[in-house]
Length: 444
Image (tube, rainbow, N blue to C red; front, side):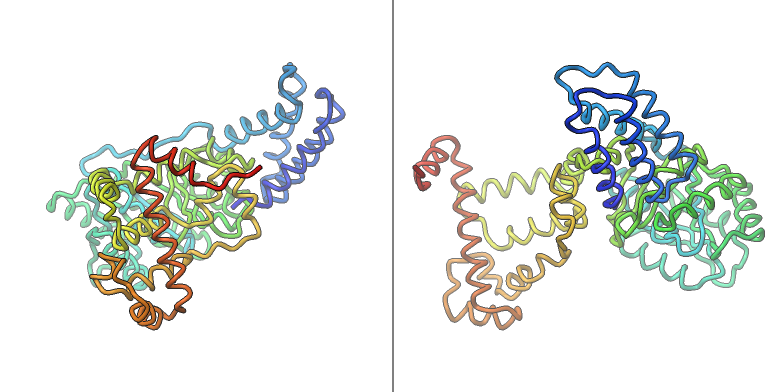
């Protein structure tokens, strides 16, 4: 995500490095390259031009402190303007209404149905709400089945009516069902087309008029670049939607849609899809995205993801087990599952300042834990509970059962033992820390 744009901007800032002060000449050279980087990222030409003119005006009007290098000042100005370009402040979804009615719109293939399931999961798991999904794409049985599967995965009911080909009547019936069953949110998935057509627009306009939604979200595939912005404008002219959802930001996207769409339709980006899993949906924060584009990472989002998976009661139990030296493979695999729930491993690593760039050309497989899980799952309950009983013959059986080698099993058990010893020492406070440090080899 934004890798190419980040690289190009970094090269642009190098043009001003080593300069004693900001001048019209070195600013012009830097911003010429910045504009090219934005255009290559498929940002609208007028927006790119206006952006660089604003940055130039602010850069030449800035009094650079002696402690701040000109390149650092330029990065700050570009960061602030990128943040403004994408909306500056986060705008939350409107959850007023009883029930809250959310209408999902967009072209076919944009990821509407997948997003509908992801949004239901987010509202249920993080907001404590009780959603009902309405399968309003009456033309594609596959879309209805997909929504049923997603609803089953996240534990949210899906309202359908076999043989009902009237999307307006279906939407109204879904709302009635939500009121009857005590659901407080109705999310209506609508039909799309491969391209904008009048029939589709009339249909979704009729649904809007009939159900009076509290929130209309327009879903767009960020990989379509400038086309995404043009589509957003046409939808907004007819629907006056409340917010934008950018899907497939984990793909090979140049980022132009994220940087242009707010300026064109004057509507906030509210969510971004970052993968196929139902948990792979992030609330959009313009300032955090600007951080990531400029290679500054996004520690706040990383911490938030960790907190979402953090169970305080489980943590207390784990702490007691570590103190008694009872940490076992069941606990170990439980921690792995929590890490996996946080999202794509490379995406998580990119949130750490400096790490994203270092890992740019390194492929981090989401199945990085696969062999570890296979080995642990090939152990008997007793072996997982009491690792010390795993002798040579057991290791051979575990290797065969997991499709790995004895060397891999030995390596995992050794790493596990070292991890358990380290955790035990860390539980002991300063005294054990001093002991740990004292046992470390000394270098002259």
